[in-house]
Image (tube, rainbow, N blue to C red):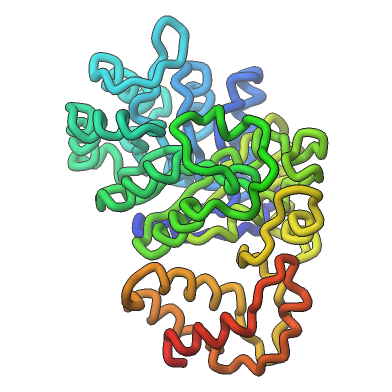
Length: 385
């Protein structure tokens, strides 16, 4: 079968080029071994090249290992350090008597001597972060990195505050973070269950800590991969969606991929049809990708006044890439002075904010009522062009 055309993105300063639609292996254990192996191989034939395997169960790891046998170099593997199987049960731990053998088992069952992205597994609390950073656990992670067993150090979390700590630590190159329109409204929490609890009236738009995290990752060149991009499938059902309306897989994928620093969304698949539904993103029209109109028309929790970088403002009569200009403006104002890296990216744009003619046609198309023309004036003043 001919390989499907698929886009690849640079995963931050790792320099790795990953498929923007990836593979989360969590659901593989539901299936017959051979059926699941073929599912992974099918995804690979379509051009998907990044796979997350956090599951510690032997069945899942054996499936992935058999699926990538003979084509290991075609895959970028995201493997987790601290996800263990004890007495047949998943246990997240920092206890080295379990951590080391579990990771060695991952390598053995995957049939590889290295993992591209070695993930500090599932840190959501400050207490756990402090423990990880001040124990033999982090020494083991560094040992694996120094020896080349893991090529890059990453971290998985659902808490934007912990993700920020990881970025600021300096040695974490990539973060696996839970991103979808519903989670993005929720404030930081050390308990993932709160993200699935009923959504209160009054929540509106992206939580400031989450928005700042995405911009910080872009600024520091820390690549993001996405988990839980479908909100566990709840976004497909208007009865379960906190917005009271349904989204499509393509719209959910586009939402994640328009966040700053995001390189790939790792979708879970049960069937080849689900792989195809996700990969339909690559050929989808702007109308099919349009999550912004769904959010703006939702009976609850709209993003009024916030630029979500959705691109609805196009076309511009002077061909400004308004979403990208807004993104660089938001990055720039995070700092007392404009970072040179942000300035260089902004100045490399074919057209800059100073060319805005103030027609405000973009504002008529913006689903969220953003004052685009005024932002262009402020951007031109900030960057000087």
